[in-house]
Amino acid sequence: MATTLKDLKTQFLEYLEIEKGRGVKTVENYDRYLTRFFTFASVGGGSASDGKVLMPKDITEQRVREFRINLNRSSGTTGTMKKNTQNYHLIALRAFLKFLRRRDITSLNPERIELAKVGGRDLDLITAEELSRLLQAPFMSAGGGSLSSLRDRAILELFFSTGLRVSELCSLNQDIDLSRDAFSVRGKGEKVRVVFLSPTAKKAIAEYLKARGDMSDALFVSYGAGTPKTKDLPRITPRSVERLVKHYATKAGITRKVTPHVIRHSFATDLLENGADLRSVQALLGHANIATTQVYTHVTDKHLQEVHKAFHGKRRG
Image (cartoon, rainbow, N blue to C red; front, side, top):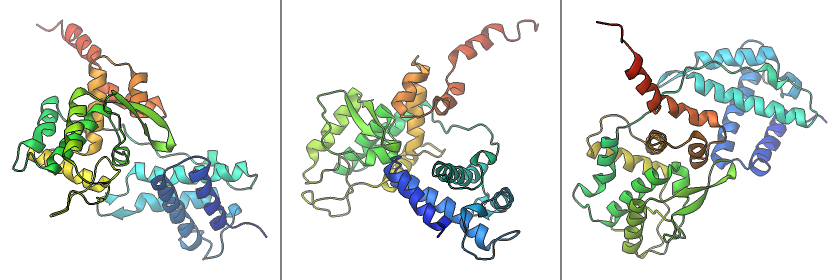
């Protein structure tokens, strides 16, 4: 009996998690994107298959084209679906088709799927002065010496010192050796890289750990009202970290949106503005492709600014 697309999708997701080492969140996203396509192809409009069981041969250029039109016309609370989000669906479908090809299963050639063109990526950046205010914010309000404030200061300093992703920071344990200036972290695709601690970050983490009395392995834990210090406290979540960064940005008087990823941007631009080479920054950020890192160069290239200043408008009176 021929294998259905539903069965093949399950095998594909297992392949992503086990063989390719993709994170749980990535696998969940691929599952959601593929499920949306399969649902549309089986019960959607146009030349849909009217609810029949889908087989690999049912993935055709026509069906994909109709799906792309459906995505482009989809709307939500923020309006029409963004081109990047549309592309995520196509990337998942293309990866699935490549998986089928490797297994000699006949279906649509993945190379027939082209991604939608998108504009250049805009970086959300804060100034050096705003960053300084953000890092000081945990101690600038009432309760500045509390355990949660010590934790929050350590989180902010660690973000700027290492450029960690929020998921990477939340997964850290207390076994970091603060006598050294570096530690390894497991990032996207289970890839391990080395990140480095600034003296300020080391001091903030050490002060936080010294004040703790709980038995949790996690480096950063959640504190609720009246939570005993000796309790086995839960690991802090990415959503909680996003909320606390937003909170301190407001306290620091920063009007634009600030997220953990904005601090990661600040980490990268700070290195490039001070002369770091692109390959080194790529390694420190854990980018698989240097093209991802190159997005920072257009805001950090002081040489171009100096050229413009030296040579622009010299003929004007």
